[in-house]
Length: 479
Image 1: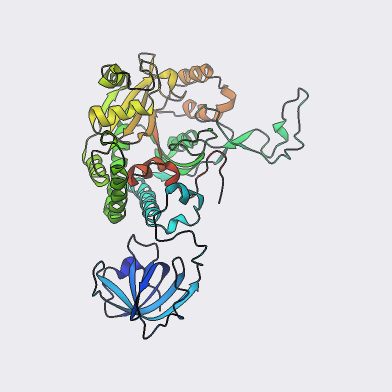
Image 2: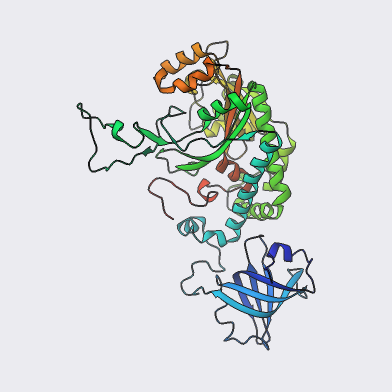
């Protein structure tokens, strides 16, 4: 017989039938008459109770049925006689497929801190919290592809190894097959990358955007969804060295159309998660509410996790220009009472505290900020007619700040070349990028959404390291 997943057994469709259940023991309790074994196979937040009659299963037979052990159980699915579950399995056979020594198995019934669970990330999937987080992550990833597929976008795999720095930030991981103890050098003592594998200096990508633009000039609408890397020595709860980005690029789109699509996209994938992982989100919401109780009243969330997500899905995102946002911040009680850590003036790069003030205190809804100063944005963003700002947009979300960054791209080759020169990028370096402006260029736009930020937003997890299976951070590449 094939096994049936716990999620499917809990619907009661198989009541009265013999079923095969395989999973891992969460708990075992009992008395001299009966043992109750809670089994979970990862398909749902809920465990399935297995009833093992002491007349059929001796203590000796069940001695290896301990927390963490993998088991295979056959039995009849019946309506439960006890409280707490609608259905249970009355066991006929119990086989231990893999033991878990209770003296050394690190996951026991007591609550564990998230910090401790990061140290055993290879086992943390087995906890309720991380089971819920990664089921939600899976659903969101599927929803991303579903959204773009329904709109006729082409899924494009852009390179992970690249010779370009899309953001111009320079915080990139080098890729080489050199023997680092014997680096070849030029006559002036510099590393001779002509002898490297690719014949030039290469890095792990920080973005697939530039290559995505090339594809959009043929397919009109494309998206990428892949790993990106940033060698930023930041050990905060908001940064990872390896993360996943979703980057659509659309020909014949302007900034407003870009913002409209991004808003529609965000609402779609959140709504999809609410429809398919509601029990996981409810569980994570309860966890967040318990966490909130330990905080001062002024730091607690105004909405539950479910309320926040349903509010976002049901709201029209507020739209303001960067200049209007600065004016709001300068007029705010927080600024006047010197509560901001960072100063506010036209031309600054908005900090997380500024973004969250706009979203959580002023508008009390997601906000799309547009038309940023050109000096704080990337070279490829379209210069506005005022000569001071670019057609950029950031979407700011409650509790997290920026979740999407995008822009209308600069399609005018003369202005693009000038912008490249101003930031020290040679034409020869991006000759292929400029060709898309030389040959059949058109207005186009795109945005990037950091997938882990979105998973954080939907799950309510406070640390980005808890929404990616194996976090890569400074001094940490374990597992």
